[in-house]
Length: 196
Image 1 (cartoon, rainbow, N blue to C red):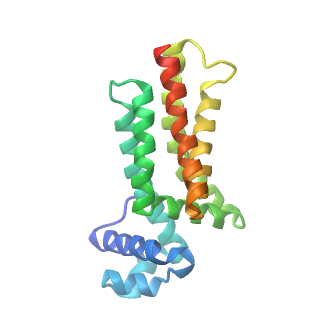
Image 2: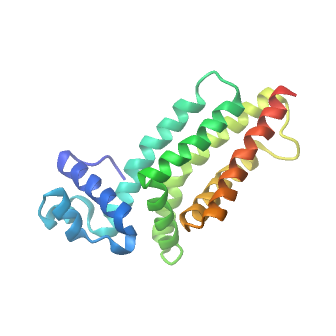
């Protein structure tokens, strides 16, 4: 998937985000997106091929921006625990922006569509790559990650965030609080290793 091709495509993606935030993927219609974007319906089909292509393009569009943000955040010279804590803060921004909801909607749609599942996993891979880079940095700094490889640690962190996001989106305050607290508790684990 490439960059949106021009201002019309970008306007359509912004309108799709607005619709998804308001109504979820089940309430998203290409006609509604076209109305919000102020373009003919044919433009959605021209640029994205249909609803699924539109949603995947939106996910990819947001994903590239957010992965670059994560790379920049983890690339600063600061204690690893502070950078992880900031990643937890950024989760809140990603929830508010609708990115997490779009991602989780596409993951669930991929359960019954193998081609879609492969595309979603391709979109997720850059997040895993960032986490693996950070885990390798930690391994170099600490000398060891115990019984885990850097790839294992990256997978565990990435999967914890994906699971936490899914639970938070279910909307129960108690479960949401527990998911957020569990993700943040890793900050103290990292801090203890780093400072101990």
